[in-house]
Amino acid sequence: MNQDDFEIYAQRLAATQEKFLDGLCRMIDVMEGLTDQLKGFREYLQSWGDFLEAHHNTSKALIESHQSVLKAFADSSVEISENTAHVKKLISKVESYFGTEAGLDYDN
Image 1 (cartoon, rainbow, N blue to C red):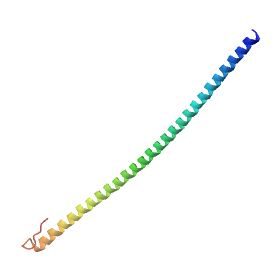
Image 2 (image 1 turned 90 degrees about the vertical axis):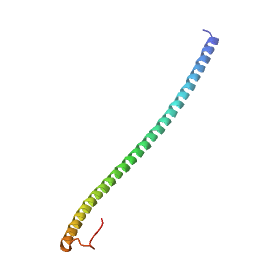
Image 3 (image 1 turned 120 degrees about the vertical axis):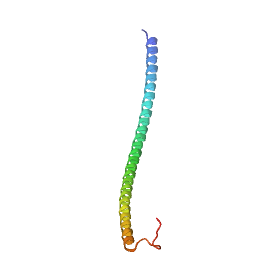
Image 4 (image 1 turned 120 degrees about the horizontal axis):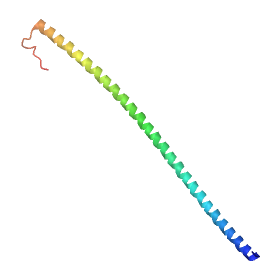
């Protein structure tokens, strides 16, 4: 191997190392881009999870309010039934004292 061959090999080695370094820099750029994409996706998933949690909490509160309304409606229905029974009892007492003569007719 002479001096000229050595210089040719040295130039090829330098070119190959330059290509390798260029490829390595591109690979690092790709990895940084992928890291940024994954970070963005993680943030998206976190915000989606926060949204789902808020939706869950809202739904839970809505169900609880519906249960309260249903309980109040049931209690109201019981009281209406009791009041109706008392009114019927009162009407039958009034009718027993005064009868059902003309003038005491009523429509329900």
